[in-house]
Structure formats: structure tokens, C-alpha cells
Image 1: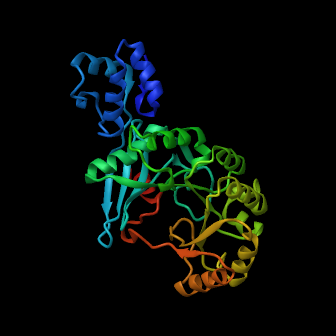
Image 2 (image 1 turned 90 degrees about the vertical axis):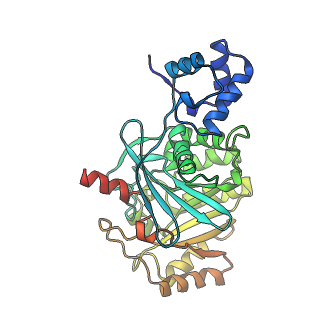
Image 3 (image 1 turned 120 degrees about the vertical axis):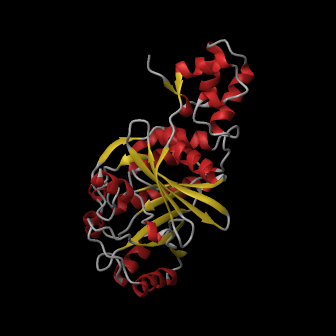
Length: 345
């Protein structure tokens, strides 16, 4: 009999399953707390349950964890990069970052990525599969246990495209914000997408109070299509129309992510076009010095060019930030550690 993925079950589903097993109502709260507060990885750790019940749970359910395959710690800022091995042997990456406000983790939603963005290491070998909600949670739970910390912020911007794994990501959001579990504020969660427009509209209807980050990276179709194949299906204007509808509906500010690639998308002319295109959209713009990965051939813009680009946008009234580089000595952007393991066996 195939075992059920218990960590992906909602509290209601778990309660119904335990009721069917003849257990009293309070038992579901005990089990749920072990899974989502204590973050155990085996049923034997649930010490306030009888041995017989623990065996019964083990016979019917499985806890999908994330085992630490490799761990790199930055000497500069204590950023930690993890390569996690999943139950089927596939690997994903996460990055734990420390800020003044606490700990934030960037997690993966897929093994690999099908989107084909030219500057990204995660997509070089395509997508293998999507992650279950439990496997997204497990990255957070393992990092918390490993560092004996409580993580307060989550960024869905690791390997994979979150909106290409929509149902599992929505279940993850339900679980991580459940007040009986981690009880994380939805406002402390950022979801990044390269621009799957129909799913942006679906997300809009949920009216969640998360931060939507749009990987824009170019102001024109010519440049964006050369960098991001998704633009050939949903072009810049179509994407920005969806973004405008999203901000009007949710009243939540969108973060536009813009990777600065030397000689490609970093001219003042690009900045002026971008300023015009984003007019009327509640947003903030985050400029990112592109991560230089050998296979992509992308070279990051100089600091002088980035700040000149930023100045054009600021003069047009936009709030602009330049992403602080964390974990630069451990290649903290996602995709490289998994790829290195694949190449080296």
C-alpha cells in the first residue's frame, strides 16, 4: 500500500484521517504540532503518542524530509547554502540569510526549471519534477533544526517556477501560515514568477497578502524574449496588464526584479522605457547585479552603470533598491550547487 504524504495534509485532512483510525479529536492536534512545530522527521519522535499509534502512523503515512547533502557557510555574512537530498534522491537548493529583522530562507519549488531564462543556472538542465508542499516545507524545517532558529521570512525564488507548481505552492502557503503550525505571516512571504500570466490572475483572486515579485529583467519584447522564452507566450505589455490588475485588486505593492546584464538591458534608454511602462502600477524596483555563471555567458553591469540606471528610475518617482549580495563566496544563487553535484557525480 502506498503511504500518504502526511506533511502535505491540512489540519482538517489529518483530523479526518485520524478519526477514521478511531482516534479522539485531540490526537490530530498532537500529531500536527509534532509535524509543523517540532518539525520531527520520524513518527518515533512523537513521544506523547503510544507505541502502537506510532507504528500505525508509520504504516499508513510517510514524512518527506530534506536531508542535508552539502552545506556551505559564507565567511563574509554567515549566509548558509544548502543542497538538500529528497526522498527519491533528487536534490534542490535553499539559501538561509540573516538580516537585522531575523532569518529569511529562499526555497526551491521544483527540481530544476523548465522556463529557460538565459541568465539562470537552475534551468540549464530543464525540469525533473515539481515539489510537493511537504518538500517545500521540509527545506525550512531542516534549516531551522540545523541552526536551532525560527525562520520568519520565506522567499519562493529558489530552483523552479512557483506558478508552474501552482497547486502545491498554494498548499504550502496554507500550511506555513496555519496558526496551529509555524503561523508565519503571509506578509513575510514573497513569491517570484517569471510571468505566467493566467496564474497571476488566479493568484489575484485569492487576494493573499504576500509580496508578488515579477522577474521582469527587460523593458522591451525584443530584449526580454532574448533573455526569457516565457515572453514569447506572454509579452511585456500582457504581463504588465496583469500586474496592474493584481495591484488594483490586492492593493499589494509588486516588486519588479531586474537582473542587470552588461550591454544587454542596462542602458539609460532601457531605464527610461521601463519607467514609462511601469507608470500607474503600485511597485518597487529591485536591481540585481546578475550572477555570473560560466555556462550563461552573462556579465554583470558595473556598479557605476547600475547606479546610473537607478538614478533614471528614481527621477521618475520610483522606489529603487540594489540587491545586497549575500553569500558571494559560496555562489549563493540557486542552481549551481546541484549542477556541480550532477557533473561531479
